[in-house]
View 1 (cartoon, rainbow, N blue to C red):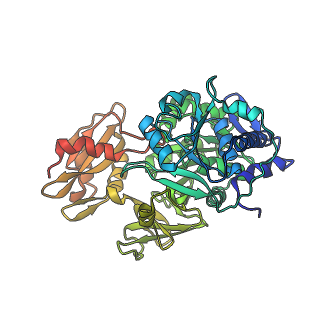
View 2: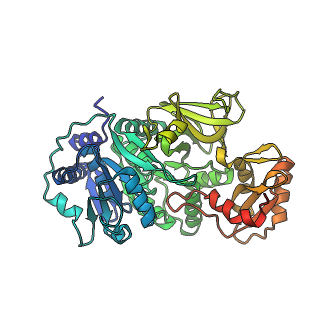
View 3: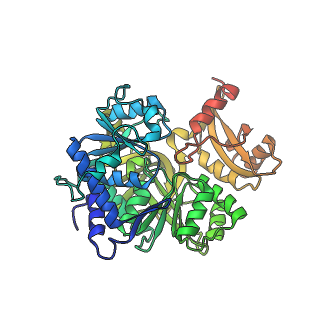
Length: 513
């Protein structure tokens, strides 16, 4: 095998007679073959090198999804610079934090975000900026147009860092997880094998490309197999279904929240989705009703996955079909490259069926948190990544999540795992969505609060929700408080429920200390 360099993936495909003229990326009405994409990446890379970019430099990228973003991703990999993706929902202070904490010297910025950044003299710590689109400033397009398309002459090693992915800041300032070329190459290869990736695939990129789900779960696995990618800018269900029908997409990867939007839209629009072979989901386990709805609508396999940014993305995969729901509720077995244990507070493995913290060992794990040695030491111990997630493994090695360790509720000395209650609530046909959090309680330590979104047209009361849980779970797990709200707060990037927002919103209303 060649050295596991990310740029070599495109170089190899562009040199393959069967792939060089095949569409690699489609964005709107633009399409680039593997040969064209590799040439464009080389022009950008050579232009950056001519500009003074050197191996190890941190370069920020702030842009919505596009084919240009994909080209920049691989161009930076070919220069040996370290990509720092910036969340495009960030405001100026958050953007500057990301750039300053990483020590980024340059920024490649879509024209629409230039004013939010404020320029190189606005406290960002930048030395230069290139713009994508628009007519102002130094344009990336102009730099690429005057640069050669030959392979950049940079000596690289597969263990060199290539990206710093910033985690969400729900427990403090965002932390930058650093990954090598090899780590993300192996992660992509493992995921492609685990899901039966094929050169004939057409995948939809719905995740933002600044998020690990974009490049690591979609771009790299598809390019490794020589498949085609359709890049979407956002998670609009109508756009997703239209793209499936137009491009005969085989792979659709979304979080459960987006899957609900897709299914609701499909019931009204009835797009042609016969081409879909794999429906993938992450960030949460699928409720039974949602899974059955996906299977009935798409008549495809469903792959439930579990992972986290620090792990390089995916750790476990569970394949489910309409004929095999035996492990419903599980996030699957570890991929071939992953070692997984469930451990107690002392780091000792627990027996099958017992709940503990999920720890992982894999070559895909991050190298470190950038310039945060103390946080790195807390997460990486003895070669194992401590995920902060709680779960249990059955006798067959399948993992079942119980929630985040920080989300666990301790009420009257009893451990309560919110995910168990949430799964139950989502089985109620009157409930479309639900999230459970702990609220400070002077007497019990914490009490259970359930935030519930009613199904369309459903007549639902708080007492009905509490009684529903009480009839099916131990009494101490029954929500003491129920809030029926129009929608759950979710992250704009991935649709993950923001439990910290719910806790803060209702802490003053119900909490006692």
